[in-house]
Image (cartoon, rainbow over all chains, first blue to last red; front, top):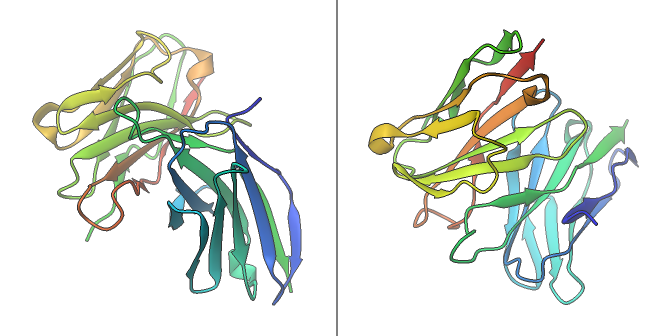
Length: 114
Length: 116
């Protein structure tokens, strides 16, 4: 079992619709959760971080965390063609010996169609 | 403010040769990380520096990889001798607790290493 799992996609989303991305993780000690956006050939760009159960909104992005279910999601509202990218879920255990180490999922490719 | 920079952007070397990758973190960031993404796989952690000290090097694949961060500023990652399976994109990231969210890591553009 992978430590962080995401559907690889592609997830095809009509322009203006909501894109919903899911991520599950296996380590119950995980404390910090991140979503990165990566355009082809570019570096991962941090778009959201979440540390507590519930929702966190930033512009068109909403991250949702449920630690009991070991599940984190990302919603992209009013999807635009510029949102077409691979979205990476990353988690951090944050313990005395591993507080810097991010564990990544393989990423979900999102394609927003005009 | 300049982001994380990496050099070179692309390197092509033959098996058995040596390559040195460089990373300059965001100015003032004490934490520096190296990650690697090989074809078709997820990004994997290699190691973490806090200033010039290695905090965690649990992801280093073997002793052909040597990372240094003398003076606590830029870091180098040397691969010697390179093997075919070392091909991939090497990312560097940095973070600084006390500025914004404490564990957010910011990534550089990566170095694409091709070993032939």
